Image 1 (cartoon, rainbow over the protein chains, first blue to last red):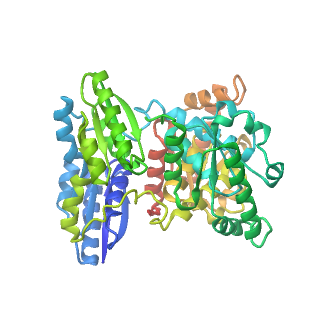
Image 2 (image 1 turned 90 degrees about the vertical axis):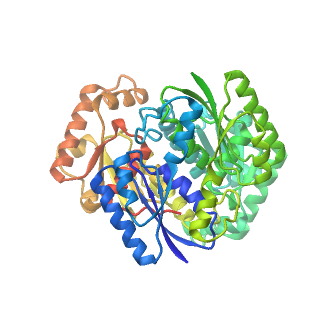
Image 3 (image 1 turned 120 degrees about the vertical axis):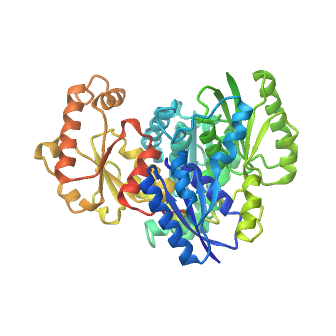
Length: 272
Length: 272
């Protein structure tokens, strides 16, 4: 069964998409065609959306699901004329929240992901540059400023995880690749030893690692299963010996790994 | 007025946080202390949460707001015993969606941000590495593989925007800094000219740029207002002359800039 879902917002659409995806992921038997439509912020764009929704309804033979966080009531009225099933995210919760908070909503658009109302926005951008500058063991000089230092073999997911933690939460995350050289010494490099309380290990299944490395350097020793297996085993031994908390990234997304690291490390996320 | 808000999930908490933040941002008169609590996935952790909620209630003198996407009903029952006002995100929408979709929810935890059900996960990770490898004009060789190439002066927000587009949407975004040299030639460098249809410009207020650069290289010519003003003016002239779509990043977050770029460029986001 096929069905179209629209995530519609007069802002970035991030909230409509996040909630919509979560809800749809609960329905595993249905294949959804997903359409993100941010900045539907004029009557004209709303009419265009109605057309897109009705076209999808005709093509699918069933009405699309609309996850909508539009604040403007005139635009909402236009969307309501479409042949879609509307999941009205904001108004469902705003009225009861107004009661509970004893305060009126400002009904203003796109607050949540905007720069003005986000005291920590600069922290996030600084954290991104910190992650870039301290990627892949490039510099170890600034580890004292790091919130966390990810360690693991090359291509186990350190870089995307650091960047995600920086962008989403303003966490200053460095990462250091444990190379064969470090492994043969069977101990942590001095730069890491000094900041042991900040270390967090990533590991990965050797087979998956070999396939990732193979794309980067096909048929190299670096990408061979034997080499990957050796490195992963040695690094996991090191984590055990040095008592470094770690998780296996093979079956987790950067979102999941990041959330697990912050729970583990007890870092109170820098929420906007 | 102060009030505590908890975003509680048995998964990453991303959905609870995203929707919770959006809703709370509508209440401008209330100062919220925000607590993200992912992976509340055992009865024991639920009891610990109840304690945290009740402590906050005592300290604030008013009950906290709980945004909860917990799927497991036993854990939800424990949370319901707390002295919090619960905004029950999932169950509010799941039952009506089950009716509409004619299919039962799988009531499974953490689907939406997991790796298994995300066909495009690999695209996202590849896109992150693409953004890293093609950052700051480092390489222009692979621009044919780019979905978009951001251009602008140094430190106008190109890098964080590229990384965000990669991580969130799997968009392959390169970026190229327009340096004084390019400006004096008053034309696009050849590497960019070839891919003109992929270019998108970022600009920024000179004052803001000077302050950002000042943090990086205090009291340098690079950070001087005069230099920043000159570069911004020249680049804006270039955008105009070459008819390159662009936005001023000064008042927008990376989330907003990214959403605007994708609408502008008509890139259908690679949604999971």
